[in-house]
Image (cartoon, rainbow, N blue to C red; front, side, top):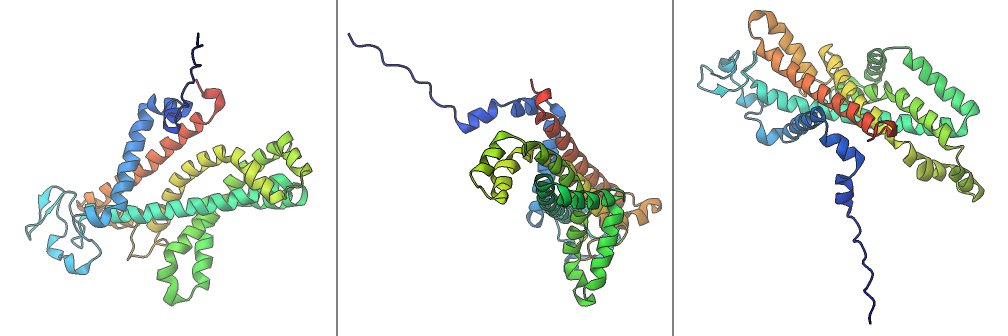
Length: 315
């Protein structure tokens, strides 16, 4: 009599485990998060595909006609062209300028956040692991920077960087200077959070075992400690992205951001506010609504991610 062969349960695939995870459960049970992610995905997709989905190229002088200027939304201009969101004073399609402007805002925001995250995480890891003098110097610099508003720090850094760049290269380097200024004004939050988590992790047994085995401190930080502090970093990065987008819009609104040849949402808002009380409300309204939707959707996703990665709030 042959004994029945033991049954082996098939291993669960990676996709199936993801669908059964606490994070996905938290996501699909939060209608606000689902709507925010859909809005953010639509805005990002529209910005990335702007050269292909925009009705016009608003920065091509050959395609502009002043006779199309001040056309109201859902109206036909004097030249017979139809514009969904209307046109500005130069005859540029507002919808097209928003799509192209969102590309600049997203690029600056994402790049500045990545720069701040890399710098802050690196300094936070070394401050928390080394302690003593290294920790004191890095944290005092962070404390001094946190006493000033981030927008003021960015303005000072932007002005200093523009002062040392030759005038002929300032317009070409304006976007990169803006990324550097915003990123350098927001690294302290990452550093303080990672430093605290690193101080907790360095006391654990797996770090002590790695030290006994003679593993280099840099490898201990990268291989062992860094993966265990990524949760808070992702939350700060998500919320910091929204702040970086708003900070870029503020700087561009003040006239010290991206050049006129590469206008962002902040630049469009600065241009539109000149016509708010003259009746052409749409020139300001639609770029402002786009900026609010972009920042709000990122913020809502950051709030959800913070709760989803908190073990005390998991069901």
